[in-house]
Image (cartoon, rainbow, N blue to C red; front, side, top):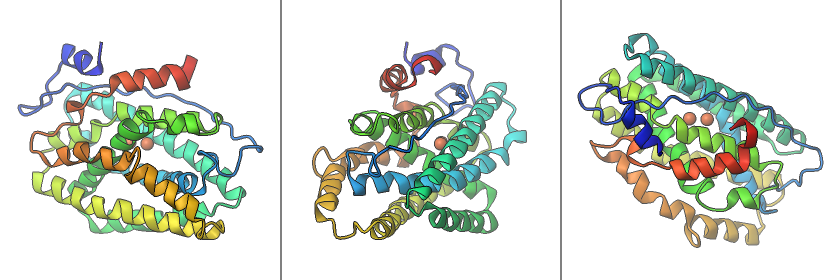
Length: 289
Ligand SMILES: [Fe+2]
Ligand SMILES: [Fe+2]
């Protein structure tokens, strides 16, 4: 049974406009180990691909704390008990992502990948948003980034072959994170709808995120490539750009799903990736799925 059918079966409407019931995310508590003999470039032996994911990992601890706080701000206003449970699942999952990626970032830092500075830069940006954006816009920011992370999880990490191309000791943390991003993709959105968040703010915040996310990621990738002495590695750049935008063109192919966000009828569960998630759970999480 797909998640869509499952949640529809136990449907508890969130409001008049909601078409989907709440999916309660399960909080897992993994404890990843990163052995000393992992290759420096653990995704496909490629600097650009590896450092792009390292740059993303650097943004998770500060970013996910921000997501948690933006949802928590409205937690008391939520009267639906199912959505309350889902919020607790969302907070638990994101808190564990934050913790495990902090450990991963420390491990990568020890191996000469300068993620500490990136983390401080991102923390500075999050502090700026906390100070200058309304709570509604902060939540809209979370809703927008959650759409990005769900797309990256479902339409990239779980759909194509990056996990198989990674060192098998590094793949499980990315599989676990991708699976849980898919599981909790609708929580911030459902909270936003439940508190009567405006469509204008939701859509304009996505526009801002759509500029900031690739620009920050691109700048951070260039910085890390430079620090690693790989800035002039044309082969790695060409391979990376081809993988993302040429063949298979994973980023290019997720554009249709990205644009669905702008529809007034958008809901994260309109796109059900349960078969991919279930397959990945069996393959990468094993007993603790
Ligand atoms: Fe996460
Ligand atoms: Fe998330």
